[in-house]
Length: 143
Image 1 (tube, rainbow, N blue to C red):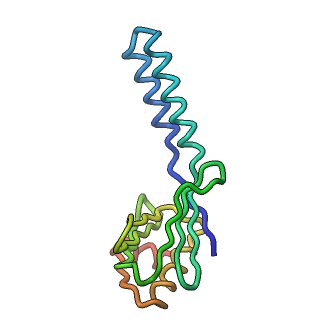
Image 2 (image 1 turned 180 degrees about the horizontal axis):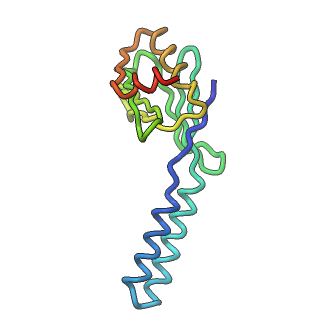
């Protein structure tokens, strides 16, 4: 099953940064080049997408720019130490997948949210340690 990860938008922070630089920097020559750099970084960050797939025998985490995969991490059940489920924000679920080798994967805004249930099923099927925080258990009860 394939799921989308909605990235937290950096556009607001970039907008505030540009306004801040406009107030601080008086020299328009330096400001225009700085503005272009910040604008370019903002455009690149806006084009980044994330994808997460749950298969029977592995998990796949991808980072894409313009639908071209730049990072693809295949996670086998034997490489997973534990999965920790927690709450982020007011009513959002999140999961951290701790792996032996490579980068840990943080899944904070999976859509649809049924993905967390599928991830728990995957962990149970492969005897992976699951840790659920008290806040996450509260969100499960609210379903």
